[in-house]
Length: 228
Image 1 (cartoon, rainbow, N blue to C red):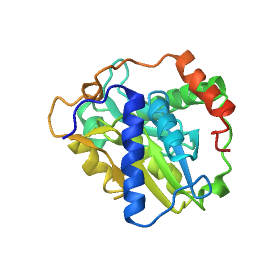
Image 2: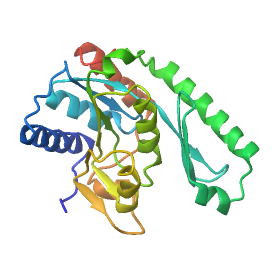
Image 3: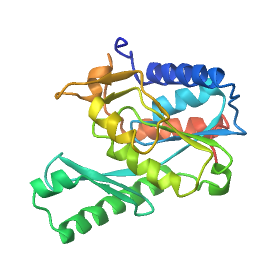
Image 4: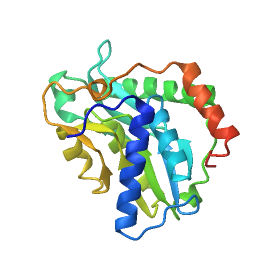
């Protein structure tokens, strides 16, 4: 197991090196013509940006909402902007949530996602271009795996050349779940402990504020790294 990442930028560079190493092994030349990064905001934008620059490709954001039990931080799944949801039936049964309650949770989260897309002015992706490319889905880590799985299911509808998951750290439980949807996973730090948290993988960790995310989106535009 590798040591702590210094920060999200360091994590992105490590991911880029791992993906490039695998591409070299299989004789695949990665370029902006055949590969794109889709980062899950907010926290996934920094490792995604660093990976994108390192591989000399382009990037956009893929908004995925986390579904939680009302009034708690307990996750019960995820939802994509197209309404595709992935639910944790075990947690739903534990909290005895009805279908009506789940529908309301999904509606609330979709509204938050729409607000986020409008605030960040996320550019519309040319979906036809994704069919010709390796799609690298990036986040800062995966505790349950539901956000990543939601992203995979959403992008699978477009039928890209291949979906590659790039996450700096994850719980073993999350990796096993994600592996049901794709075997192409790059995750240098997999932790098999009940008390897993994403921030434990980083030496310097903090939640991102809206200004930081907007700054990185501005960098993508100014540096011609935005995939549209």
